[in-house]
Image (cartoon, rainbow, N blue to C red; front, side, top):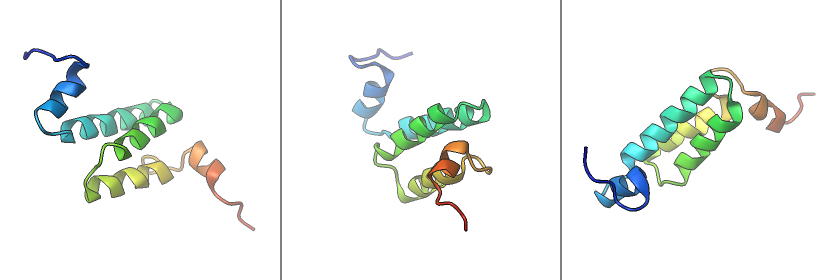
Length: 85
């Protein structure tokens, strides 16, 4: 395994010129947290992806996850939604 520079593995990945693996793994962590019922941590990871300048496809995917989770509405998303008349 290669030498890690100051700042850990994430800094090393950025140093090599691509943050794509970091965005993808962060999205995967969000998915895993969601499946484990840890909705707050999932949202945190997905929101973090949006700060890492994702491409349009990944941005759309993550924004969808923030609205509905992994196919079922999260309690956090439901709390933010306006009340239905």
